[in-house]
Image 1 (cartoon, rainbow, N blue to C red):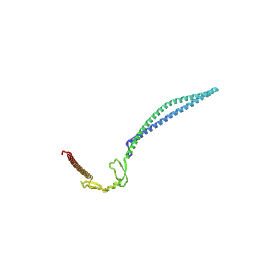
Image 2 (image 1 turned 60 degrees about the vertical axis):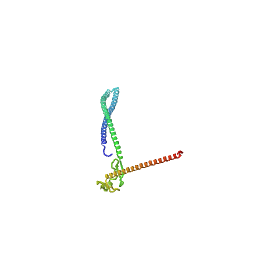
Image 3 (image 1 turned 45 degrees about the vertical axis):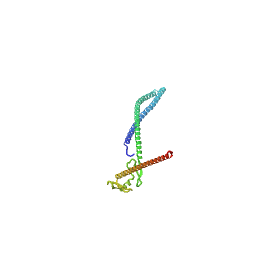
Image 4 (image 1 turned 120 degrees about the vertical axis):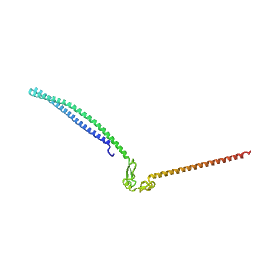
Length: 274
């Protein structure tokens, strides 16, 4: 394809814009996904912390009961105090986790919204890509048609190939070099009939003495004379045919008269009264 197609350029720019918008949407999706994963990881961390605290609280209460059974009230009280402190911490972790769930919902909503936008831009990119490819295939088809119009033929003088278009009004017979050299063989002549100037090539086998217009006139006059001659010959032939037909008619009439006379003579010779 030669040149730059404005429509293909426009579609290319639209495709680039769509791709840029998709890239931005994907980046936003990745960011919201990372935030969602981070929030989910915090909740998992809280779950692990809760499990550890529950285990520790159970251990402290078990130790408290053991110490009480052994009669060591001070040690038992120490384990009870530790268990209560852990319980308060567990309550705080639960509250923090609960607040984190609202953030998780927000992060999930943001991620889903970003993902929907990414899908929307992906569809736009696909449509832009399809339109660009459709135009590109059309241009390739048109280019193939245009290329099929170009042919080659050998130069009449040197034989070098000449590339030409079949739709050209005048298809050259000479290559550029031979055409330039052939210019030297051309010169102006004066028409012997009308006096106008016309160009001839000194390499022609038969160099005319009259211009093209006069040659057309001479040719037309010659055709008219030939037509008149043919008409006269046809009229002459027709006249001869008419004379021949008249002579034939007279001959046939004379023959018929002789036949009648002969028939009458035979009748008379056959009649006994005569």
